[in-house]
Image (cartoon, rainbow, N blue to C red; front, side, top):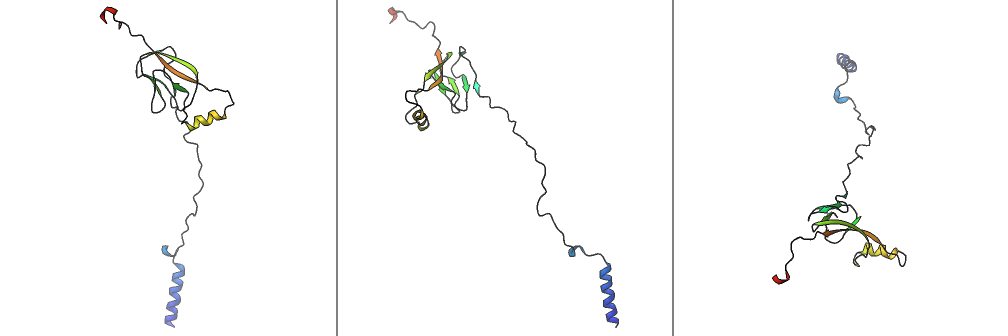
Amino acid sequence: MASALLALSTRAAALLKPPQAAALAVRYASKKTGGSSKNLGGKSPGKRFGLRKMEGHYVHAGNILGTQRHFRWHPGAHVGLGKKKYLYALEEGVIRFTKEVYVPHPNNSEAVDLVTRLPKGAVLYKTFVHVVPAKPEGTFKLVAML
């Protein structure tokens, strides 16, 4: 009887004590709560494409004439084409812009595809940038010196 009373008192004591931490079931969130979102970014600065020198300006060899993402201006006489499609002067002189008939290279598949879609007899005009070289002064020789 004493053993039954002891077992009953230990059960009662166990019921009155707070539960142990290991015995508690802990539930965590199965999904994250939805937070507010903001449109961050989106206002990036421009890439500064465009002409650096205008028509009639005097340029030195190596001066950058313009930068472009796609071909807006094509290199003409005494004008070179850089890696990122920028145009630069190969000679010292004055800049001139002209509209000329564009004849694409036959190996350029994109340009040939464009030309084949044009109506018969139509031509493409593109803007070309030229540098008209400055006349060198004092480089003449007398006929007698030749």
